[in-house]
Image (cartoon, rainbow, N blue to C red; front, side, top):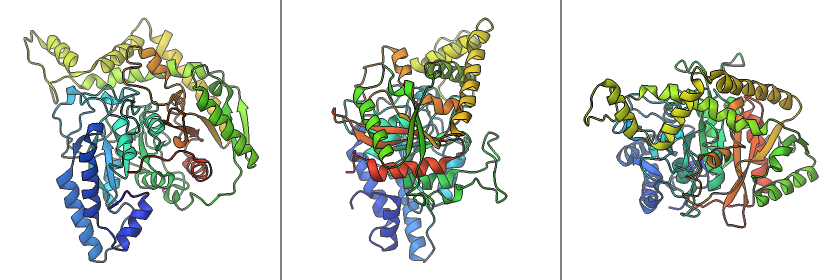
Length: 494
């Protein structure tokens, strides 16, 4: 068996009886074992995946129609709950913890007969941009094992990049799907905040977090988005229906409508300050400007826009997310579940200190302390309130932008994947690497990174696209158009 290019190709082969689900699962289990040095998985569900594959093969033999994700092999990030399996957020504090329920997003995949093959490595509690902050160790970039895969969803990205599964789930709080997709040369989409239920997603910053998708094609991402979207009684922040049918406009037909407006001429803008920012790699800038020229020559409208709030987005993001994290992570105390330190404990306060000091990694501790600081009585107005004001300004600016334009294009990251350890001693430099991605999380916009380019250093990089809230259809259609007409980078497919 060879690598599968898409879910469509896979289903055609299944229908023609050229392969079976058991063949497919065995293929991916072999690939995972062959490439275990990448450290993409924290746990592989081999027995369960093969059992599910046999059941699905029997269904087809009995003439049952195949569902949307019949036999599709999917990996999930180790912050997404799956009943009966460990979920640790790559942290010692949740050592040995087994999920007691299944996330809504995962359940919807299972309801369409998907096969969950394992749980993927990530930065601890989704806090990081390199996947160097994991209790399980670093995930390696399959394109160059000396480079970081991006974070925090690095394991999920590498699982797709290296052909260890067909598609995977990550989470995106400030770019944690789009940035690793950029570094690994694959598609990574963060939907509108609330498009996919967060029930069963371990919280980092609740008003920012969103489950996202990694894939080799826009179609596969669109298909998973179709399946996972929708109302959930367990999540009060999920988007409510916009049509009498009880569905979002286009939600049920993302895949059918993907290429329906192939000849549409888009009205696109980009932020002048983003493409001329001193942190942006010269080749990334030149490639995006060349793409803009190509789009113009094709009849699309692409114009620059002044955006004087760009330098405020990262500070506002880190003030607000760390504040939410300091509240969310308060529940991990070593009393009810997970890691518990028992060495020379004097009293309850000492027990909490010792458990959290040893259970949480340095980056998580840093962000908890930052969040506690900005919420403290003397600094709340100076930091937290100001950051909320910036968020409101960004939201207002966003409404004005999408009243005039179909999409915004930006770099995904200032540079390509860098070497392990290159930025670990400078957390500020690491945080500033999120300058182009956090905007979508602050405003709740859908965003995607599409793998269009290859750098002279041989590493891939993508283009980031954002559209108005709930307008994933335009996001997907424009992304598909760009992938079909402008892609120069071919992802690993071995």
